[in-house]
Length: 489
Image 1 (cartoon, rainbow, N blue to C red):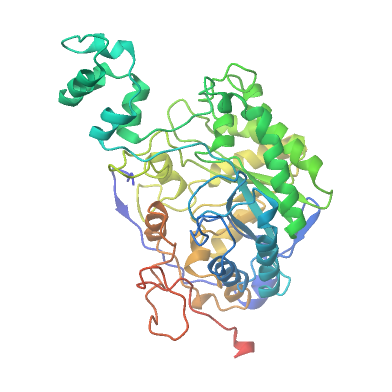
Image 2 (image 1 turned 90 degrees about the vertical axis):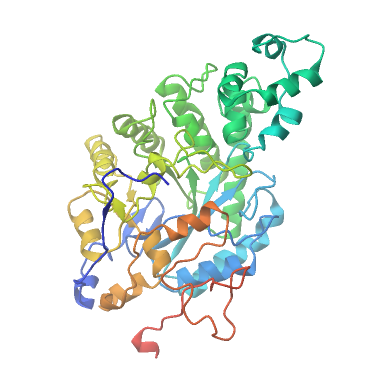
C-alpha cells in the first residue's frame, strides 16, 4: 500500500474514558431519527467485507457468527457487508440477487436482532461491480488473449505480412517492454500490466451501454428482497471503485446523458434511488455511501462532493454515509496472477490510513470534508443525517465531532473489528477495558488476499480453546473472544 513520504509512526493511546453517567448523557449515546427509523445511539458499524460467505454467495454459519459477534456489542446500527445484486460468480461475497437468498438473509437479520436484544438496527449494503480479471502471464497474454489487429503488424520495428498471425505473436514476445508498449494500444498495455478491467465508459460493449436501463431494476429488486428479509433498510453503494461511484466520478465521460456533466453523472444514481424508493415501503430506510473526495487526478473533489450530497439529499435519501478514496485509478500494479486492488494507491491510503502517516496523522482525515458536506446541507435546509467514518476509536474524539456539528453519526469500522464490545464497554463506564485498534491495517492485508478477515489483536488468543472457529488454515481464530458485562458474570 502507498505510504506518505514522511513516514511518521503514530501510537494509539486513550487514557480517558467516560463514566457510565457521562456516557448516558452524551450525544454519542443519544437517539437520532434516520428517516423512518430511530436509532438508540449515534454509533454505526460500517460495512466491512469479512470473506465469510462461499462461492455461491450464501449466508453461511461463519457469516451468522461474524455478525452475531458484532451485535453482542449493541451498536446503534450495523451495515451488513457489500452484497452483490447480480447472480454472477464473485468469490465468497454475499449476494442478494435472487429469492433463493431470502432464507439466509432473514436468518442473518434475526441473528443480529436476537444477539443485540433488539437494540441494534441493521441495514444491508447493496453493490454492483464490473468485470475485472487477474494480471495475466505475459506469454499467455500474447499467445492467447491479445486480439490481433492490423495495426500490430505495421507497428512492429520490422513490419510483418498481415496474414501471418503466428509469426506476429512470436515477434511480439521477442520485443522489449518499451518496444511492446509502443506496439500495443493503451488499453492492451493496461490489460497486460494490470489485468483486464471494464469501465462504465466502455459503451462499445452492449452490456455496458445498457447499464442505465438495467441497474435501477437490479437495485430495486435487491432492496425489495432486503425488506422482505427484515432489514431496516439498504445502503446503496455509491463509493470507491465500483459501478455507481464511477457514474458519480468526474472521470465519467459518457456522452449518452449519463456522464460528462455533473447533472449527467448524477442521473443514474438518482434513477437507481428513485426505483428503490418506489419498490419499498415508506417505513424502509434508503440511504447511500459515497465519497467526500476521490483523491485521484481529474477525480471528484470536496467542492463537487458537496453538490452531489445536496442532490442526493434533495432527492430524499434518508442518510448519507461518507467515505473517501479507494479507487482503481491509482492502484499499484498487482503481481502476475493477482488482481488489481483499489486500496493500494494514495486514494486507498486515504480510505484506510495506517499508523505510518504524515504530519496530519491517520485519524480524522475525513472530518473536515464531511463537515463541509454537512454544513452545505444545513445551509440549504436539509437535515439529512451524515455519517462520518475513518479513524475513530475514542469516546471523547467521537463526542467532540458530534458537539461541533461535524457529523450526526459516528462510524467505527476497524475499531469495532478490534473490539466488537467497544459500545457496551464505553456505555457501562468500562472504557479502560477497550481493545484499541493499532491501525496497522493487518485486516486490510487479509482482505486484499480475499482471506477471512480477522484482527491481529485477538486472532491468536486462546487458540487451543475448545470449540472456537478457526480460519481455513487453522492458524487464526475467526471471532474476537467473548466478553461479558459485569452484571452478567
